[in-house]
Image (cartoon, rainbow, N blue to C red; front, side, top):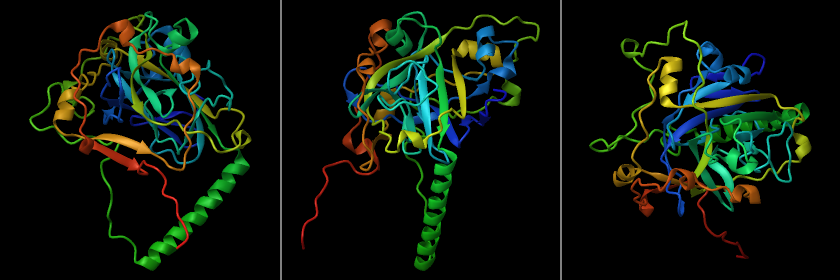
Amino acid sequence: MTGSGVRIDGNTVRLPGGVAVRFVRTLRLPETGTHPLPPGLGEFPVRRVADYADRVPEEWRARGGVMLPVYLREAMWLSFAGTTEPAALQVGAGKVCAVSGKRWSDRLARRPQNYVVLPRQPWLDGINSGKGTVRQFVAVPLGLGATVEGQVTGEEVWGGIQLQSFPLREDVLAQWRREQERLEQERERTLGAAGGFGGFGVTGGYGAAPPPMVGGAPGAAGPMMAPAPGGAVPPASGGAAPRRAAAMGLGVGGSMRQEVYQDDRPLTDWSEEPAGRVFVHLVTPPEWRRITGEAPPPSPVDRAAYTRAGLPWYDYYDEHAEDLDPTDTLESVKPVGDWLGTDLDPWQPPSPGQITPLKDPQGKTVEDGEW
């Protein structure tokens, strides 16, 4: 990623302008029905392609970027927590925009909108496929036609995930920073007058590691940890020639309740040129082991066992944001089950008490009157 301005901080990819992106493992949803937000089950490990230049395919070296291991039909979502300043972020699935369904572009567009607005958009679980819903990101091999790229463009060339960030124009950003300073000073005065808080904090929530399952659910994914020094898998020999790795891309799975928010800024507030971009290669677990010498993460957790254990699902609603209408292109994308066969994993819907509301409670607005 030389000269791109993109860096890795642990498993977080940081793009210029304060953008932070983490790739989060999660439960794969059934491909029928509409579901609440599934939980985060730990981060995918992320490594730089340049650090393994002698073991990756030539086209990977040419594209640069980062790589992460993912199982066939494993689901993921993108977390933007830790983004420090406003940014417009383009998200591509095989160089097809996950928001608009249009082919990849180096320019922001509004009709249709081809980016998410950070930090207002806290995460993205899939493509913008319906009013108030998205279809879950699911890993699938290239060559079947099951990827978003294959269904939209008719060919599968790129695979992977693409990210590109646009900051605010310098004058607009300076104005935003001044406003943040003013709000922070007001907050400090308010807290000082009230005597402050006693260190009370909120833990858990969407994306937080779930508590351990009682008795250990079958197939449960453990913490995402680096291998212990004594148990690391030996790397491939330095003289081994790079071979063609199994190419993976993003298809879609089940539908969930999630809004992709409409930008309420003028398009001219954003920089015309991207500040940074990165190509994210998706690697099968055997290839991950061969390339990095690290053991891949454990296989995904069993979703029925997760629900039986009473662990939380989530529902997010922002009453001040407006949902972006889906495009016909993304509405017509079919789930990977149409290519890979019926989803045979058992499904146990969460009870209402297991669905945790986040941010604003959803419901009809109560109007005030004269009194």
